[in-house]
Length: 166
Length: 434
Ligand SMILES: Cc1cc2nc3c(=O)[nH]c(=O)nc-3n(C[C@H](O)[C@H](O)[C@H](O)COP(=O)(O)O)c2cc1C
Ligand code: SF4
Ligand code: FES
Image (cartoon, rainbow over all chains, first blue to last red; front, side, top):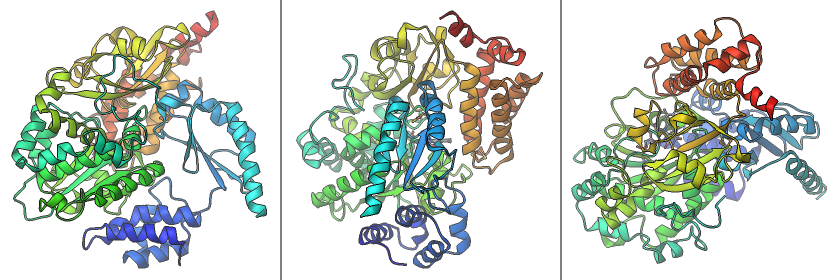
């Protein structure tokens, strides 16, 4: 497999920064960076990573099954991760998650039929002072009320639709 | 994320660049004494650097509060193996969001702190282990690293001193347990985040089996001011054995939540009522978790205390990661406990039985109590399971789950009983009378 120039540059830097004889050490970030481009850790990705790092399929599978951000199937175009942990919960995080379920018609780990949105209830994302907090892909959104959420969804739906037409 | 001005009670040392234009750039950093501490360290012996850090009474900001200078002194400098410096930027403890600000607004101070540590232990490379969710910070740090290289501050023969050292970012991919130092090292080596037996500690056998200095981001960021102004000056800001300032993340039911840099030993009630603007809606304070979700909860009447490691330990809790979670009288303690324990159940790595099974039990029993499906004896089940976990798990995550569980049922027993008996709990009483 060949990835975009940007991803390849990232992977090259990752490999260069490993101590001699410790290529395997690049495994976790490498999987994440590739997933960012491909959308999921497919069997082809596993094979490719084995080759690049000289590790076994078992080594890779073990890691993929451990880390919560690594996934076998693609998420939606916009992956919405809502924190319901304690600090966010105190200011409405759980209600926001329920609202999102209703708004999108999907639950935890669900993907909308058009593939536009996926939803996940996540643990603390380091935005506790600015809750309720969520991430859309890697972007942080702070102080998210249901109204703010709805507006954002409409906006993303618009953007997503336009991007698809292009 | 920042308030326009620091609160007057703040002592801005680590956060002093946060509000400068382009604060993350090397230009701003250099214009504000940046890398001066490292230059000074280059002229010092490793022993002198470690001595200065010891004098500062700096204690680890990751949670355990271990004295940093002492930790560095455990690294066997005559070992033939290469040595490493690792920054723990996993920041996963619920209630904690301060390392994120340090990296976003002042990434060079982290690099400088790591450089000084490298000088003290003769390390050859440094890694910043960043949780996967903090992707944008990787970009910021990579840029800072590149700038530092261009200024001859990283790489070969740094500033003509003969020192070789470079720093690299490394990302996690979703796992709270990878914040535990040995699980982090496993992850850094490309494995599942299952912890290692300690001892040996990372100082003697860490990254790639080599001696390693592993500290929290804020701990490293505290080092440049210590070297520049002297360990005693830093120590003098805090209380005995608790040097310096600390970034407290105050969240929950306060009017002005945020990250505030306050001297160690700052009074917790003042923190809530004065710095964070008081309890929201003029309500009554009910409880505080003083240092991230792993720390035993304090009742409001227990909160008149200085926030340092020793005072919190005396009060039966912990200063932990400095995440102050404030709960007002409308908070249902059963709900709070259940949510916290669901977190630990989800994040337990599953390697040892008391934690794998115990966290599941605690989460399930607390959740059914929360939802009104509790069974007689459930509160005792929580107590017994939690007590049996304490001290019996392979890594500290087990205790981190058991301790809050125990504290909630001990301090708010009546609310758990109310849920069991279908009576309104204290939080519902407040709502009824509102
Ligand atoms: C389950 C668990 C999670 C932890 N998560 C973090 C973390 O996210 N960041 C951190 O700095 N330390 C974390 N720690 C503490 C580290 O194990 C370690 O003590 C710390 O990084 C050492 O640095 P310090 O001495 O500068 O505090 C965690 C510990 C445990 C048991
Ligand atoms: S206590 Fe045991 S199961 Fe829990 S995280 Fe640590 S090693 Fe894993
Ligand atoms: S608890 Fe929600 S971001 Fe920390």
